[in-house]
Image 1 (cartoon, rainbow, N blue to C red):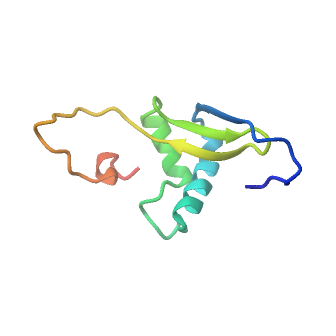
Image 2 (image 1 turned 60 degrees about the vertical axis):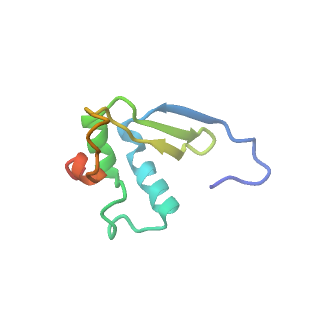
Length: 99
């Protein structure tokens, strides 16, 4: 995190995701998973975050450090039809049509 040791304590807010957070989501996931998004198709890039937001706007949230405006957490979810008697075994990429 880009915070000086003598700075104010972090103020974290959780808000609905928005297009302005897409790059921060990509940076966060690249750091968490230690991958280069350009080389690893399963990580959510900024463009995939925007796509998710346009298709599944409910349930998309980010945690933001108000002192730095840095995205420090995120969720991505969607509602699907689910029958507990039939296992749901396809990948996330298949479920979201790769985006």
